[in-house]
Image (tube, rainbow, N blue to C red; front, top):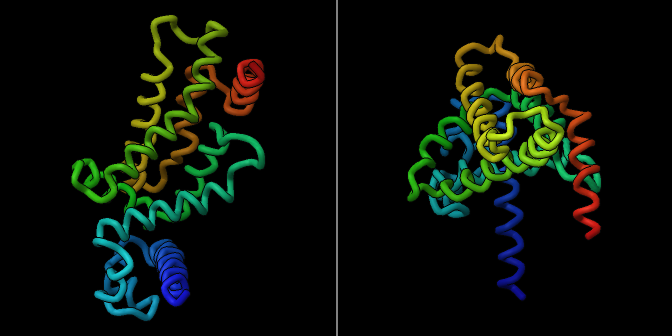
Amino acid sequence: MARRGAYAKGIAKREEILSTALEVIAREGYSGASVRQLAEAVGLSQAGLLHYFDSKEELFTSVLRKRDEVQSRAFTREQEPAGIDEFLALVRDNADVPGLVRLYVNVSAAASDPDHAGHDYFRARTAHIRSLFVPVLTEVKQRGRLPDDLDPQRLARILVAITDGLQVQWLMDPSIDMAADIAAVLHALGIDASADRAAALDAAEPALEA
């Protein structure tokens, strides 16, 4: 029983660290993301903080994962899968927390190394974002609004690349409206986020019932 209690306390402390780290980075920016500063914010030494994580890389990856959880609860509609509308809302929300965007850009670049603690997280996250685009792109293609030889999976990959690239440009020039630029690309493809999302979900219902 004592071991179970200690485990529960450890989980709770880890969650406290991640929630506090989100607040610190959102408030003070990426410069506030050092292990020392985060440790001080939760009343621990640097060694004490890293006791809850295998490495600094895992700590920062876990912070980003926590950010995903918070945004998902805030923007995903009940009993419906997330779609392009929700994705654009997340992009707009990110514009209010440049420190977290800078953390994401820096850690994601480092995580391209397969040995990085965040490698699997970023691969899974990128695949998930692509999955938000593919159903809409597939439905739009079926309506003849995209070239027959344009693969929705490939186009989804390009849209994710545009999104990641815009984040880098926005960090250098905060006047850029990332969500508006992404919406403009979708519009150029003949996609209205709300209407096409609804059509894609309607088209998917018979397949789900079958």
